[in-house]
Length: 328
Image 1 (cartoon, one colour):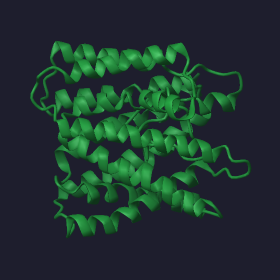
Image 2 (image 1 turned 30 degrees about the vertical axis):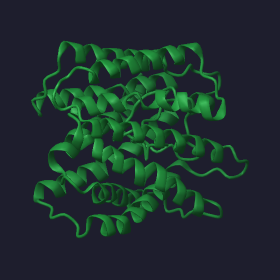
Image 3 (image 1 turned 45 degrees about the horizontal axis):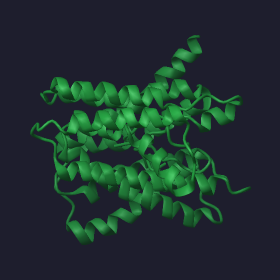
Image 4 (image 1 turned 90 degrees about the horizontal axis):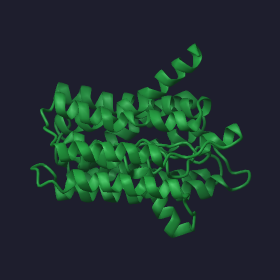
């Protein structure tokens, strides 16, 4: 019991860090520099994890890491950055909480991976909750932010499907920590030249911005991914999925308490519906420890690397490198 409590506490670091990431990005990171913002999040985290795992890609994983890094890190982190700065923290975190449900529906359309009735019911309830939160006429619900969130979900879904296909290749598996490190590093390196060409010189960073980037990269990315994958290895899928609910809860609490965001009764009702939808649509635990873990929910700012890919229908988001990582 005590060991499980410790495991739950460690796993909870991830969704709490991802939920706080929306607030930190919105309040402390420079506006108008999403490419540099995403690069400064991904590259230090990737290098730290690379130093921990001390493994380099082999064979096909050089190319696969670049492709997955582009989708799950470069594009996803940029979109999450834009969404975080365009939407109130409470709304951004709640919208991204339905990312696993979006992946489930995309998988149904693209690869005929038919969801169970409970999954469909959870998706319907969750999406209705998001609509209830957004269609309120309240100031601060940016169309640009909503479109960035929607695009992040689509990129995350495609990255998930690609990761799942490659993880199924016999003999081509990759260690989860190493694959995450490769994707983060590749994604960060791809972002740097794009940032120079598109955004020019790097933005001037104050002391607060540097500390914020330290949090976003080392805590909300490197440490959060390690904590999350540790939970996936040691806890039941249903437990991990429910822990992921701390993501939108953290975002809402920080938005209302620290950013003075005001949620209407209608928006609170939408939040409750999103949480209920995620719980209802969480994956069923399978007989077999490994299968249950693979069915657990991984967030849209969590990368779903090969060997650690999880079918849609579970929980948290940010934070891919989500695509395989909802998460931001």
